[in-house]
Image (cartoon, rainbow, N blue to C red; front, side, top):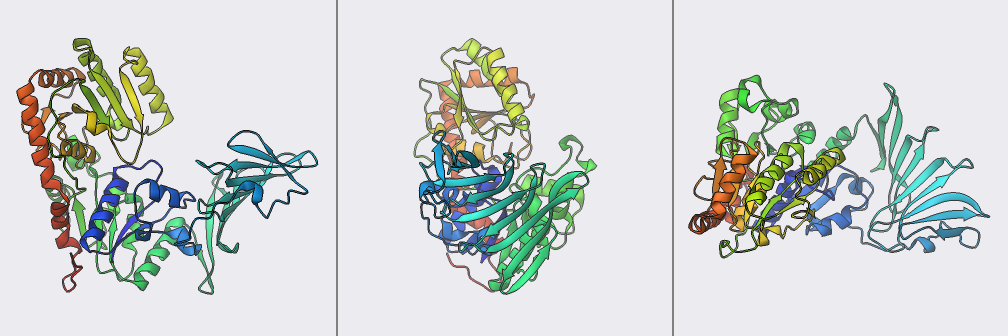
Length: 501
């Protein structure tokens, strides 16, 4: 068995999660049994798994495991049919489509929230004291069982969390107390697990216990993709192999690599519990090896794989520039908008579409204000995040101003659709994935004006555009599923065991 360790299947996932999803699919289809082991509690997980096209049988969540809810089928729970609310005594008063009030003889007893994306199904109930302060809140799982009970301190902060089994018994209790003037979880109690109680100081300790339980049942290779989980994986006992996959760049300063790495990479790179450290490109693996002097030389395996379209894009109207990915400051979205502003001044038939999710509200406001200030509101569109990206199908060029990528899954996906990339030079991506004059145009002098100049020049040369579009597909074909599996085979095929495929 191969185990991928992760935090969650989020509503909004990053490249790390998408990399895991692609690996999970490829490994299982190839005949290497693989599961994704998740740490975070997520009462909407069953819905999110379906939304991202994943197989629930290949995903195991820690809370589901301890709550004995693995494989539980969904049963819709209309809020007006709950046995816990006797409607002959209590009244549910609708406020809007998403919320209602629970009242008894006119007094407000609680607030009811409808399960997101449903009509009339129970999501949560918050019970209030006589002063209107929250006392207890019930959270219902998407599959239709009462999953979590929260109680509160007088100031409204969380006091306890009880995670329930479908039969209503308590599987896990988390206590929150004042620690250094902050209310935070301080005790994790796993109750009646195989007839015993267990106590932990942190969620990560509980997750390590979970990983060890899984490995004791069926030993396997563990792959850590999240630096927040490296220590948990490092502490797994008697695993045949433990791999740390590093998707991004660990150096604190790319221009002065000798200054060392960011602290979050310390465990992955220097804990001898890991059999191997894995990078998406040889250039990065060699750079880390030479700079840090690791005891074991890092190796390389593909970060993702793609299926290519049959034909490259042609340079026809309308000309749509795109960016797909996390909308964050390190991705330099405002510089992309500056670039487009200059391009639009030269060619007012151009349009710019960006798809993804904002890293935080403050940055979103900066970006939205930049669109207004640059007077491009009518020709710039922000497309909502979606698990499946359709924007590549209408794209003419992919613009990229990020300067730090492990590989760049969004860039690879663009190439797979026959869409050339115009990008700042990106260490570890330029030369390995993006090849100047072959599938992309690379801008070494990283300024929005030069990015715009190079992009406009490409859009004016149909022959050059078609050559790069063709080259984009040829590059992407080197990252197909077969190549992906071949890159991983030396790492996950045990010396004396044939995983099949």
